[in-house]
Image 1 (cartoon, rainbow, N blue to C red):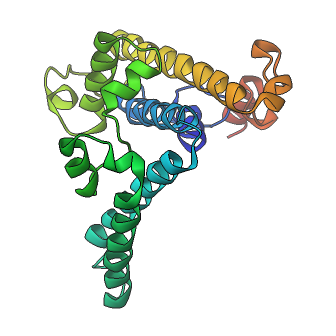
Image 2: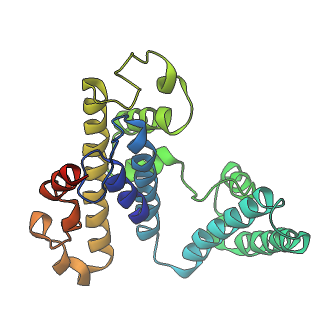
Image 3: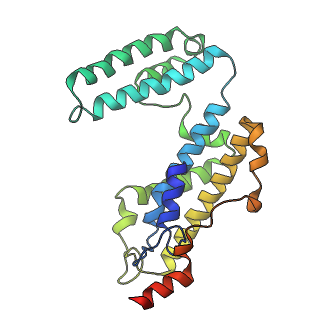
Length: 235
């Protein structure tokens, strides 16, 4: 989430954290990062809300390990030696055995056991279930997830109804300003609530959470607007 938050700061036009000669006003420049921030919050809340018994936590962590081994084994054969790919497969089988030995796994419905052993899931819950646990309504989650996904992937929102010198071109236009504002406001709300989740999990960090009074870097002084303008005239 931290890396995506920094990427948003760098992508937003006129952000003091990033100096660009040609700002990109397309909502697609931030949508994918905001969706990743949402995903991060769902996973964070899922993990910190896990039951405290060791058996369940072992199952939660080993499901994530299984997913990681599966993804590395299926995606990286072109860049890693064969023995490493075979190692991921062997490790995946070992993890499955550990997972199946937990009481938590044994008490799951057969359908959820099958889904877990498919190696396709990080969580024992669906994204929608995780979102509801975070306090998002089903309708809100589905809207933001589907809307942001349209700009994360090359779906029709990215290239249908593009307007000359306007919407979808990267030039400053009212549609993308409003769409970017919608995405950024939602991303900001998610980060705020994720921070609350972290403070709840780690109470000692509460003293650092002060809302607008929190201390943070305002960005490089060289990127302040007076300095930017001065550099423009100096060229």
